[in-house]
Image 1 (tube, rainbow, N blue to C red):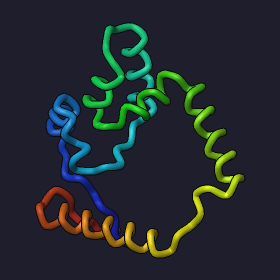
Image 2 (image 1 turned 90 degrees about the vertical axis):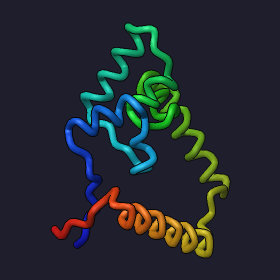
Image 3 (image 1 turned 135 degrees about the vertical axis):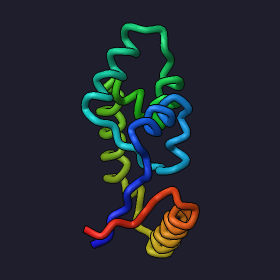
Amino acid sequence: MITVKVLLGKDTVSIYRKTGDISSVESRQKLTPFQKAEIFHRYMTEAVSQRQLAREYGVSRRLITFIVNPESEERNKELLRENKAKGLYKYDRKKHTENIRNHRRYKQRLFQEGKIILKDG
């Protein structure tokens, strides 16, 4: 099994958090429960916008919205269930194949640029 590891040290992570550049390295940034609590607390107590928090943590503004307003996430999930029941979001094999191919090219480009390494494990 091959896993992908992003090359970021502790100092680099704080730099990326401040600049918001991490999203250009890895498009699926994950937040820890501590970071989510920190985002919620900062949004409620400080005069900081959702866009600013999204830039700092390298995530989408929509994710920040879901963290600070959990009701909107539930409403969104319910709408998704309704739309799927109506027959929307049908699986398209050609589109899926093309998306997988593009994702692999993207990861290969990151590897060639030295932004990620492959780790056996």
